View 1 (cartoon, rainbow, N blue to C red):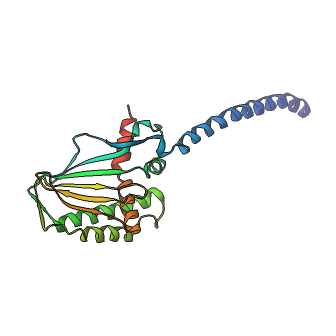
View 2 (view 1 turned 120 degrees about the horizontal axis):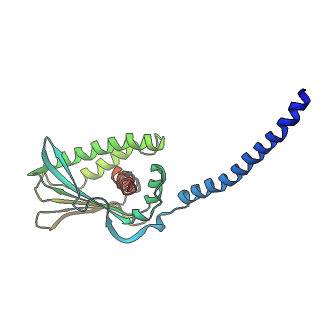
View 3 (view 1 turned 180 degrees about the vertical axis):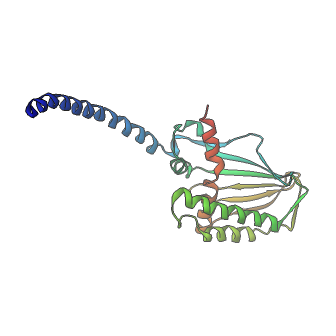
Length: 226
């Protein structure tokens, strides 16, 4: 009786095994193709010769205690709409890393002091360190030393004690051998401060800080929700 049952079951098991093998052989190439699309994408596939605004063309306005303080616009020498729609966050940042970035921050409050500007950078850098650590699971990629590099740079800019409403701060990350730059424009549009960063460690810290801004990935995700 057992022999009879085994003879009946054997063809069924073999058929199921063959079906499963066939399904797997079809699925694996599709999986590999999907992974290749994500990992083979490079910054050169989306790079532009000029800046393109990323996100709201009117910029993002920050408020404190209900009072508008600054408005920041984000620019990238790249077109995020050309990227695949299903990139993971870490993959996304790897692709945009070599691309030049720029921010323009307009002071819309009555004034801002040098101390407050430097303090804001420190707070943003501390927040970035925690964020990058979680994203990359790497304690050594963005450290307290990166924050120190940013603060040392800001303190050596010869910033004025106070800036009036309408002052514009422009930071460019540069790319390749072109170092990052920091410029300040008065309310009339005259450039009052300009500095190019050349120290390699400071260049690295600034580029990491601006590359991993949440804004880039948030805009990318939102554009792919439709």
